[in-house]
Amino acid sequence: MFYIIKKEIETYFTTPFGFIFMGIFLILSGLTFTISNLLGGNGDLLGMFGLLANISFMTFPILTMRQYSEERKAGTEHLLISSRLSLTDIVLGKYIAALAVFLLTLAATGVYAVIIMIYGAPNIGGLLASYLGFFLFGGAMIAVCGFIASFAENQVTAAIASFGLLFLLVMLSSFSKSVEVPVLKEALSALAISERYDVFVRGVFEPGPVSYYICYAAVFVFLTVMNLKRRRLL
Amino acid sequence: MITVKNLTKYYGGKIGVENVSFHIEKGEIVGMLGPNGAGKSTIMRMLASHMLPTSGEITINGVDILSAPENTKAVVGYLPEIPPLYMDMSVQRYLEFLSQIRRIPRDKRVPHIAQAMEFANISDVRHRLIRNLSKGYRQRVGIAQALIGRPEVLIFDEPTVGLDPKQIAEVRSLIEKLRKDHTILLSSHILSEIRMTCERVLIINRGRLLADDTFSRLSDDKTPRYCVHLKCDIETARKALMSIPGVLRAEPAEKPDIPGCAKVFITIASDDALDRLSAELALRKIPLYELKRDAKTLEEVFLSIISQPEVNDAPVAEGA
Image (cartoon, rainbow over all chains, first blue to last red):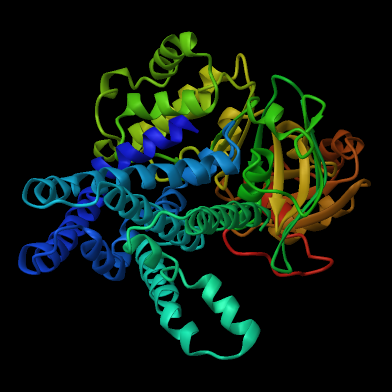
């Protein structure tokens, strides 16, 4: 699996995709930092991450849009399948590589934390909780986008479909609050990807939301493996 | 080495490959011939574990590829019609990556890659990005790719398609070099291509195996045809030839090759008819100018096989 991760990370930076993702993400985080902290005068990054969570979902499809469609187009998907790698290795390798690029980008926003620490007195625990929360939140979104990308034959379809689904999952949070039908309300709430993120925005670290996002990602990674298995049978 | 039994593949209810069975011995070089869309690539993909069959059995070295895919993956090297290349990698990095995912021991990777590159004659472009290579070079990188892991069986799907004559000759000579230590199955829709490299041919059409034989036996005619030139008018020639016992058919041809003669094609039941032919013609005082065997060309054999009427004319899936 290590070789897949290495190859995928290399591809992010030999093609423009890694740079585009990093660029757009950093522009968005810069904007939210400016609005929430520089102009708003907040002494911590909680507001910035709260705002970023609502707009950053549009950047994750950039990380996953070429993951499977490019391999399919070039015929290299079969190269991977017929190698000694298992489908789980392939899917997990691609997922971890995307996660690594996201982590690297997130690490770059550490500059804001340093600025805040110089000019303010943030709660370090709260700061770490919001970083961890945002990483888990992003990880779940990347898994959803990877799943959608595993169906697509071309990059544009993968990007648009992932964007659409993420938008829906983010919107579900407010939608589920207005639904009063008992079982449906719980089901929608479980799917609403940003609902449990609010805990991290308050700077609180709780095992519930942490395991929720890890499970969310695991389910979609599993579904991606299943989809590749199904495609091989076609 | 490779045994295929009742291999069948359906694509969403449509037949891609139906009940194909054949056996390839170790060290054989076999060609798979058929028109575009016949099902050649589908069979090859299933042999290379790229696709699972709907039903049937594939055993390589006595091991069923469905029950032990890990063991057979290492034995088969496959070059699809479009070489599977990472355009953003250099040739060296690409082969390195393949040696890693094919689990070649770390200490053996460097000499292994060097050997494959040398064999495919791509050592001079090792540091270039694959996207900047010509089609012929890309095909050679594809062949080098199939050799990584030293598989015993090589499957090449239309290895010369889209190449210029010089590149075709280069790829053909590479295959020629490989035949010494490998069992090779290669496909083409061009007959001369297969004839130049293979001893045995599998003819596929509409997902079915129509013939499995050597070239010499395929073109061996059970009821031989001869071309006869006689110095007389065409009707006399035809009547005279038909009167000879053992001549089944006499078909006059339009343009004789020898001026002033009648050209007639005869089909005979056995060589006895030939023994009597000159004597019978001499009795009738018809001069015999030429008698030669008119063997069916391989093209004719191939066309007659693939145009056999279908028993059950089921639609064939696209892209097969």
